[in-house]
Image (cartoon, rainbow, N blue to C red; front, side):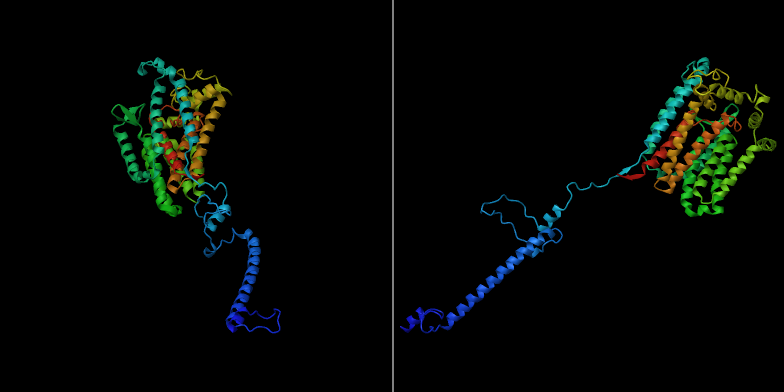
Length: 484
């Protein structure tokens, strides 16, 4: 019975006279239940507080990625217990990072090589215009001469074939790396001396001048090759010297490279010798920091031009100047003294320029080309341009050359290295000097030196090597990298 009373006894707080005695094991169970209730209450409070913290912290989820211990895997069931479609597991970091990524991520910047199409168009325009003017200036002479097969298009056809071949060669060179020219600097410079010596010995005698070297049915002027060889040599030497080029001694030695080849060429071709010295002057002017010696040299050259008569007489007496060269100086100083002799070409060129007026006589309507103006398709073609197209045509041609020089300046300024920049500067100096001298000769500003107008005057060797030079410039431009 006692056991039954203990089993049916109830704890204190119930109705009854005296509380029943509860065994120790029941007291322990009660304490456990009480502690469990307290823990649940505390857990509920913590859970509510945590929910509030979570709701407030949802805005900062992307900035504060959750630790790996708080990640919960997606079991693949919805709230109703239905199976959801399987999808790859994603971490909170990847979802948050994707939420803050832009819809269209920026594209990677590409490096594109620059190719000066403007320069190509200028070369094409000058060459095509030159072919038209060659035909206009030479059609009468070629048609009445049996030497040219009575073909009015003889000169234009020959020039067109060489120009087309040179244009293809230009495109081929433009796609090559111009640094290979550095290894050819010394061999090409030495070869130019060999060719100039050969032309003095076994060269073809045309109009009393040995300027052409024949190779089978072909002939070319080694002086044109010397221009390119000097440009490459100067660019390579100055690149190797670096900052030492600003030293007086070094500057003088480098300029001697230009003067030496210019002196050899000037023995048979004074005009090309002047151009070679001018190329060296321009390249050194750009490469050196000290500028005043070049301005002094320019002033000295103007003084020499002013005293050309006495200086020419002195050089003739010591046999450094040929008689035909001295006659050109006399014709420049006094063209009206011998209008039927040594001043004939100069005066006819001035007549052509004067009769052109503002808009010209019209294309193909020149009078001076009908046997009056010698070499109308060569050195004096600018006079025919002025006569047929007037001042408007002459200015248009000059503007094309100025645009070409501008493109040279831009390419040299953006060139990848000093060697490429100096190559472009040398070619720019060559073109600029030759254009200035040709126009000055035609207008009788300086003595007649027999210089052709680049890309326009007739001359297969000239246009071929000019295309090679344009290919070198385009090769430098093709190495310029632009980020797009």
